[in-house]
Image (cartoon, rainbow, N blue to C red):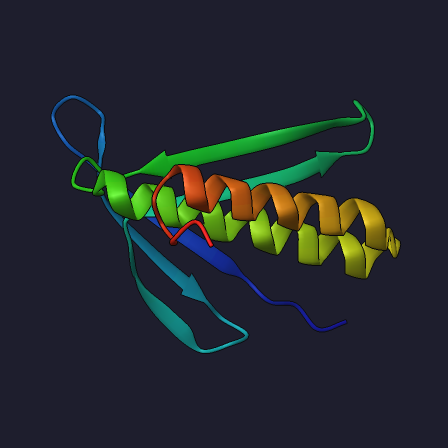
Length: 109
């Protein structure tokens, strides 16, 4: 069986706030720095989602809005691939568009 590893290393400041997020994906041969991560894992036994949301203290608010918008869009894409629920996924994309307009990420046209 082939295995791959994704690793996150979080540097914390004196107040235990993330100051740097480094990541490495062994299978893709990629690594880098990030200002925010959102990780969701399904716990089958508890039938619950476990989450880790971290962002560095220097993550800009405007960048966080973009990050959240893009996450909403990719969640809809993932759900459609996984479930085939086209209408609900389109509704999610419509909400993501509404979000982008409200956050002034796009022009309201």
